[in-house]
Image (cartoon, rainbow, N blue to C red; front, side, top):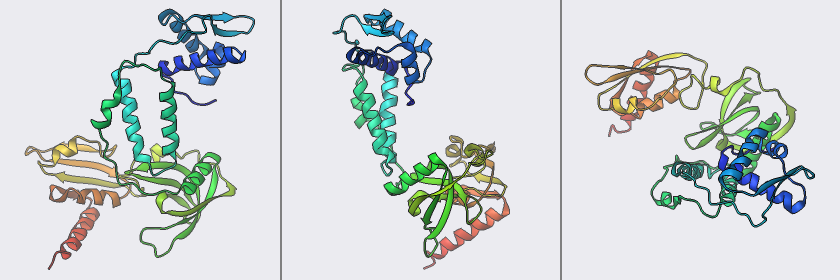
Amino acid sequence: MIQKDKTQLLRLIFIDKKIREGMRFGNYANCSSMAFEYEVSSKSIMRDIDYLKNQCDAPIAYDPRKKGYFYTEETYQMPAINISTSDLFAIAIAQKVLQQHENTPIYTKLTNVFKRIEDSLPDKVSIHPGWIDNRISIIQHQKTTIHTQIWSTIAEALQQNRTISMRYQKPQAAAPQNRQVDPYHLVNYQGEWYLIGHCHSRKKILTFAVSRIEHAATTTKTFAPPSDFDYSNYSASRFGIFSGTGSFQIEIYFDKKHAPYIRERQWHPSQEIQPNDDGSIVLSMTTSHLFDVQQWILSWGSGAKVLKPEILRKEIREELEKSLEQYAD
């Protein structure tokens, strides 16, 4: 069975298609067969057929000999189906969001899925979303390049629980390293795809940027994903994409000018915001590492000041001193 969209609109189109196919090939579709293929209950299909008969005046009849439905008028066509503005708006936005994944093979596949959905729609709809093309834009993160073969290897390994043998180039390493990794999870973060998996050489779960994998191949080794591994729990205490084994209680002061920007987002699941009388705030959170936190704090310039922990204050101060040295002349 193939997972289908569960909205009534596409179910009605699916039912109409199956009835016509049954009439053409002599193998009539019934509630059970359509429900099985569409992965819904037989009652849902029955309700949809009643809707077609009573609301769309569809001449649907049941043939007890062939145990399926047919149209008593072969020339019948489903009427134009009204699609709400919000539905079309959502579809159009989804297509634009999809452009963020042009650097991966899934872009072509998902684009084809959207095309099939569009082709299955009736010729006329009540709302036309063409205005969205030049009225709404999505600014994308800078994308990295991912080789099709590497992407396909990772997809196969994830599906079959097979160990990957790969050559990985760390940003500051002189040469790529050979690794064997049990892939657990694939995640997209700020335009980059990351592979989360157990590294055999490091004997721990690590995060690998897919764009830095220079070669990958599945091995004959298989593995059973740990029963206690859940990506939501694994990533709950991290800040950004990378994880750590520590636990850092962080407090950051943001001045009045920057406070509104901090308030309007959830930067971390554990965050708490303490307002001050002068309009400034203190953001508190608990993370498992400091690397991404440091980069984030530096991006706010003089509007942010680390209060805790001392090790983070020291790292920020050292980084700022090194930056100032670049402008000493």
